[in-house]
Amino acid sequence: MSTPIHTPVHTASHGSIDPDAPLVVLLHGRGSHEHEIIELAKHLPAGPAYVAVRAPIAEGGGYAWFANRGIGRPVAESLTETMGWFREWLDGVAPEGRPVVLVGFSGGAAFAGGLALQEPGRFAGVAVLYGTLPFDAGVPVEAGRLADLPVLVAQGEADQVIPRELLDRTWRYLLEESGAPTVAHRDPGGHGITAAALDELASWVATHVRPS
Image (cartoon, rainbow, N blue to C red; front, top):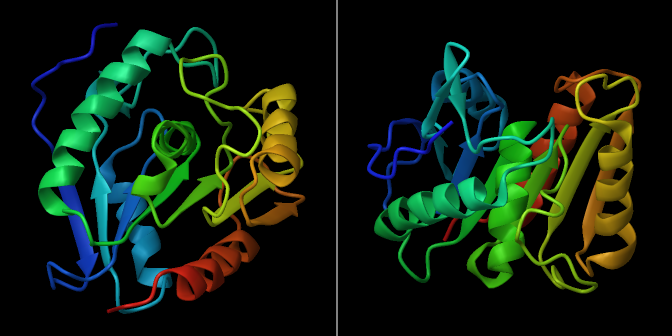
């Protein structure tokens, strides 16, 4: 699978249209698209601008953020390329001084985590929902890497999509090694955002994304 370097950026928006409002970027899962995950914004606090971005790689009737070498295991070169593509877009819509929070689900969680690990100072927070961080994919994961970056991690105990070892490694890294002030949520659900997790996300956004 090749990554289209010059893929145009397709987005769906909700909330504030103020170009200076805090920006919450929603990143969908593998095989999905921006119009599905933007629906989350209707359940999140008013004030920020919400934008869902379509991943650049066509896959399975939807789109993906990177080529995989196994579920939850990005190909490093592909992840590097797509993160560069994303950052070029982001720098155009959110210049320095505009807070940016990433909210990723499944494959989008790995992508959000990769962006935060690559440049933690660029973001005001990151939510890793029902996914893994991109370990062994060319981004730094040393202890203290996410110090002072607000993080939300949510997982389902019955998740049969993301390998359990990766979920556990993500949980352990964020809570014990990353240095991030992390809010952690686990519920009995599977690979999908539950009502309880959505409530936790809304509370976390309200706490960490404050309109200017």
